[in-house]
Image: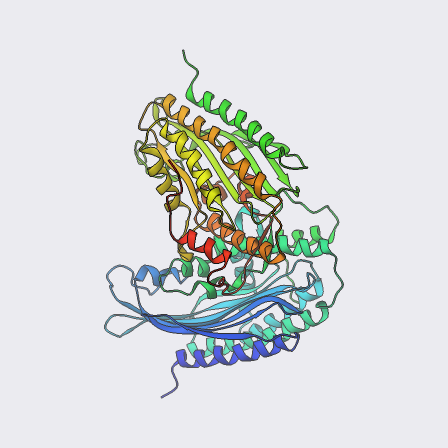
Amino acid sequence: MDTPIRQQMEALVHRKQLEITQALESLDTVKFQTDTWARGNDGGGGTSMVIQNGDTFEKGGVNVSVVYGKLTPQAVSAMRDNHKNLELTHNEGTKFFACGLSMVIHPHNPHAPTTHLNYRYFETWNADGSPQAWWFGGGADLTPSYLYEEDAEHFHTLHKRALDKHDKNLYPKFKKWCDDYFYIAHREEMRGIGGIFFDDFDDRPATDILKIVEDCFDAFIPSYIPIVARRKDTPYTPEQKKWQAIRRGRYVEFNLIYDRGTQFGLRTPGSRIESILMSLPEHASWLYNHHPEQGTPEAKLLEATHHPKNWAKE
Amino acid sequence: MDTPIRQQMEALVHRKQLEITQALESLDTVKFQTDTWARGNDGGGGTSMVIQNGDTFEKGGVNVSVVYGKLTPQAVSAMRDNHKNLELTHNEGTKFFACGLSMVIHPHNPHAPTTHLNYRYFETWNADGSPQAWWFGGGADLTPSYLYEEDAEHFHTLHKRALDKHDKNLYPKFKKWCDDYFYIAHREEMRGIGGIFFDDFDDRPATDILKIVEDCFDAFIPSYIPIVARRKDTPYTPEQKKWQAIRRGRYVEFNLIYDRGTQFGLRTPGSRIESILMSLPEHASWLYNHHPEQGTPEAKLLEATHHPKNWAKE
């Protein structure tokens, strides 16, 4: 019998946690610190790897979690974008398994973009043990404080290439999903310049989707590391550092107000707050009624967050 | 005929906006900047007074808004803690009037506490013009980064005195309500060391409640100004400033995740985002898994946010 998908995904996220943290460490003078946690009375736990106060990375975390147990159907449905296949009414004991890697990296230099990546897999069963549903979700995106078009193009192009290998319909769909999902409605702006995002991905064999996820994972390191490598030593002014903190304030706004994973995590008993809020930057700032002057690099970035653009080449 | 309560409340909040900003300015080298805003197609508007980058005050705003028009019953009910008297089902045109003053002041010195104050009045009418409900809400509270027990006692005692003049049952009730409302559930800690908070206040004649609100307003200046006066020049270290930013991160967490007014405002079309988010500090910080060492002043503050205490003397 083949290894179950959930075990393959678990092995994948653990392997990627090491590969990604090693690739990031190659750009910095400090190392990631690792700590593990368990869910107490509930099943599962995780491994958080955190980098703080580096020369390159101000703050970042790469978290793997593998959790399972019983949840109310309402709680399970909150983890999913739509609710197909989930029996929400006459079911008192949905069992679930979830594993994933989630990561946010905030570089120190305001010219180097913040990035977020998350790939996850869910399975649910009925109380009698029969399978109910499974799906993949995730994506990766870029949030710069200053827009370098070649960085946006590079990041998008490599992710498009990874998806195009499997199905040319995926990138356009996941790119739009990312723009739509990471949207700060009260600001009428996107969190950054996008990337890819998907949820409820179950429309083909799980082994095929796992391969797609693996290829997206593989696309991340070459899509992000070279960007940081060429921006991390760019000279910057105190004013540019302040602008970065203002943009990180917007990041905080999105994550605390809109992000479904954060909302779900903060309201779930037994979840680990520190791992959920690992995504928040070391520094964020709010100024009253702050608007960059027209024609400045700050205004150019804002403009890009108001109008989705097709960054991918090819 | 007597002046309607809504006009009296409107006059009160405008008068208090000037008194409070003048009292605060007496402690600083910079002045409040005033700007007014209108709700566009909807009725009403407001006056925002903002202080930034002062020697004493890092960031603060005192905002008066007077808004009216039609709202869905669901929207009106979201403004209220419980929904009594609001006809939520067979009613398509609840008219409302709301006016209030809301204020958050973040001093620069980590030994001087942040404060929040808000007093507001609502009225609703049925589509035929008949009165439906009215109520007052509001309160004032203190959020220090370092606990000075005499400051907490002073702030609470003056607010207790203002309420005791009218009804000795009010302070204990409003003090507990404040502790319960400004609670960061995912951290299992209170936002600060409390004060008073109430909503749906309509259990006695409106003129009596207006007088209570006025007395609470009057209690604010002597309860807060002397605290800032004696803390604003206290020497502090860079580490103490960092701790202040971490505590302000918690302030951001409460306001963006739990505060009903913020949630309501951010999701209401036509509301003014800058005035709603005026409450956020200039600087906030998040460190992974940060816990102050036992026995330190930082741990003492945290301890106070975990265990409500009866601060008022008398």
